Length: 130
Image 1: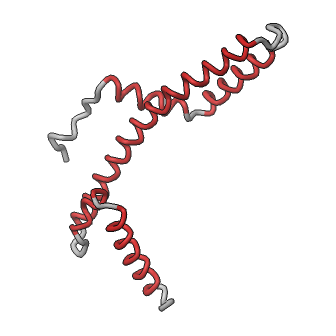
Image 2 (image 1 turned 120 degrees about the vertical axis):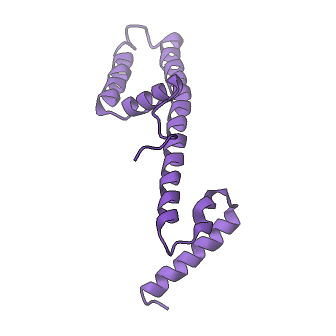
Image 3 (image 1 turned 135 degrees about the vertical axis):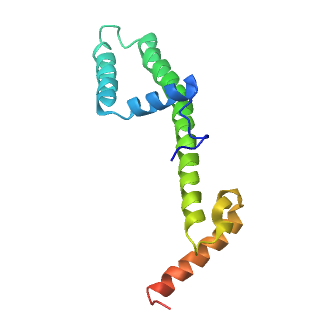
């Protein structure tokens, strides 16, 4: 079923963020990072373990980490929002579901904790522990 909101038009940033997030989680990327660190360590004696030599790895890792935080967060925000929409749709179509739970993520911590306690109580009752 096609829906007008379900068109695959994504911004260049979103496409890049998803690609970078996916690529950073691959074993090959981890291997490349390990290789870079080993290469840096091996060149230590060549540069006399100088301050500049240390600054190279510190600056490189800081920049990569700083940028990756934003890319991964953008991807995670999108994935979380998409999952929330899917869960909302499931709640909406189940006949006995309480539609009041559709925007649960908008409640404050105390309200969510009250609902959580209610579901824990229901789970305990279902297991016959009460």
